[in-house]
Image (spheres, rainbow, N blue to C red):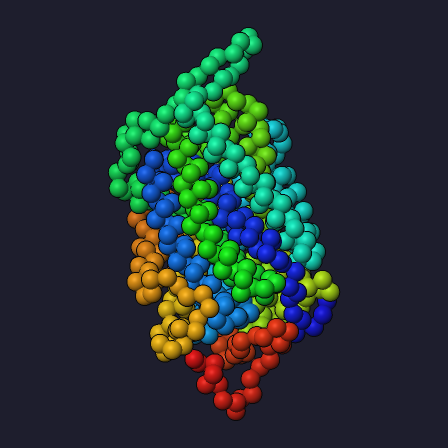
Length: 486
C-alpha cells in the first residue's frame, strides 16, 4: 500500500462508464423489489417510475454539472462540504456509505432468494456468504477489473431485459404455445393489455397506495449516483460522464416503464406474490419453464452487478472522505493497483454482518433494509441538489454561461425535484411499515451531527479542485481561502 497521498488510477473507459451507468439503474429494485411496489400501487406503479425517474434525472444532471465544473475528491460529499458547509459534507458522505451498505445487504439477500429456485434445500445465508467473499475479492483488484466485470454483467442484464420486453410484447399481441403434462402443445391467444385496468383500474389501491409505493420505487434507482464517483477514475470524463448521464431518461423508459408495462399486461398485478422475482414468477406461470430459468440467471446477474457497483461506490466515498479528514487516514491509502484497500475491507465486514442477519431474519429482512436504504438514498439526492443550488446561487451570470454541462430548466427543475424528494422523505412517516425507517434515519443524522461536533470539527482539510495528477494538500492557516468559497 502507498502512503495516504496516493491517487486513484484512470482505468475506466467509455465502454465501462456507459455500462456502469446502465448497471447502477438496473438492479434488485427492479427485479425483486418491484413486486412490493406493484402490490402497493397496482398498474399505477408505471406512473410512479416515470415521476421518480424524472426527479432522478435532474439529480444526475446537477451532479454532472458540478463534476465537470469543479472535480473534488468524494464527489457529492465533497460538494456538500465545499458549497454548503463541512457538516453537510460529513453527513452526506457517511449517509451515502450507509446507503451502499444497506443496498449491498439487500442485494445479497435477493441473490440468496434467487438461488432458492434451483437449490431450495440450501440455507440462504450460505449463498449470501459466498457472493460476499467473491465480490469483495474482485474489488481488491485493479479498477479496470471492476470495470470489465461490470461491463459484462450489465451487458447480460441489458440484452436480457430487451429480449424479455420483446418476447413479452409478442405474447401480448400474438399469444404463445406451451406443452401440457402429457406432451401436447396448447396454443394461447394474445393476452392484450386489458390486465392493466381489469383488476380494480389503474389505481386499485387509491392515491394512498400510489403514493406509498414511492418508498419502494425510489429504492430501485438507488446507486445511480455512482457515476459521480467514477470521475476520478474515468478516461476523458468531459466526454464520458455527460454521455452516461444523458442516457438516464431512455433507460428509465425502456427498463422500468417498459418492463412494468409488459409484466402487468401479461399477468394480473394482484397475483404477483413477491416470493421470487416477478419476471421469474410470471414466465414460469405461463408454462414457459425454460424462460423462467433463463430469467433467473439474469436476475442473479443483476444482483451480482449491483453488489459489485455498490461496494465500489462506498469504497471510493470513504477514500474521498479521508482526503478531507472526515474518515481515518488509512482509508486514503491505496494499493499498487490503485485500490483503496481499507474501505473495501470495511464493506466486507459490514456485508458479513448482513449475512448473519440473513441467517436469523431471512423472511422480512429485504424490505426492512430496503426501507432504510430509501431514506439514505433520497437524503443523498437531496444534498446533491442543495449543493448544486448553493453553487449556482454564488455564480454570476457570466460564470454560469461557462458551465460545460449545465442543468436544463434552471432553476425550476431543481426546485421541483427538491420539493419532490422532501415529499418522499415525509411519506415514510405516514405508513406503519416505513415510519420506523424515517425514525432510524433521523436518529442516524442526529448521531452523525453530534459525532462531527465532538470528534471532527476543526480538523478538516479544506477541499481544493484537483487537476490531473495533483495531490490534495492542506492549506496554510494564513493562506487566502477566498477561491475556495466561490
